[in-house]
Figure 1: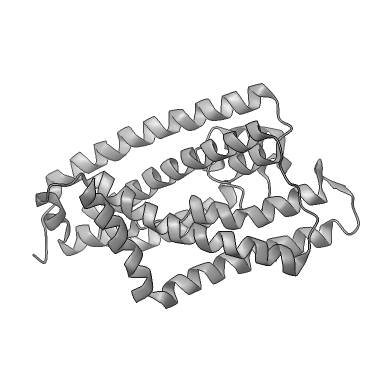
Figure 2: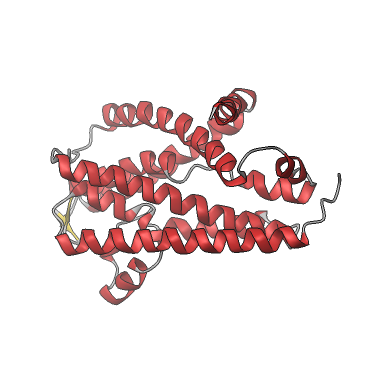
Length: 264
């Protein structure tokens, strides 16, 4: 376990070496949240209830996306594609560490520093914007919220590892990842709660893994849900965790068979 602690520590130190990159990432998150926040605030100026949501609920949803992006959507897995293409993967294959644990620890360091920043930014946004917010006081919903964040982080890690494994067959990995992230913002519910969509489309989205990255955890935080909705959501999320894990290992094993370590 000591070696993974040093991996975590070294990954954290990288942020102090590339401070501008980290600052621009946090700035992007805040700007995105502010755009959505002011858009919904304008909508509620003429309506007290929109799509079944009260203003405090929607504005809380938008502000908490800052936390979701930090805990769930922050990642270091883009390095995997680079390591495959550059041949640096060969060094990782000969050291006594588990490749997936190594990358999850790198992700964990990313999530740690981003979450710390989010915990500073959210109070700052609340002080500056002074929005009406919804404070969840039910301990059960808060516990479920934490569990769904863990599920979401695992799903996002698996999806990103799968995208990185494109590097075994192609030098171009940035474009697929960029396109995926653009689609993810919509499919995951970053711009609006997914249940405002037409019911048939909403039901389809609930069968996809993406809705469990943002929408489902935030819906849990807001509470007032039926037992069947929560149970079905947790089951579907777990099923996706296992399916993606299997597919991730499948691509990894197939990729190693064609890996040529160019550049070494």
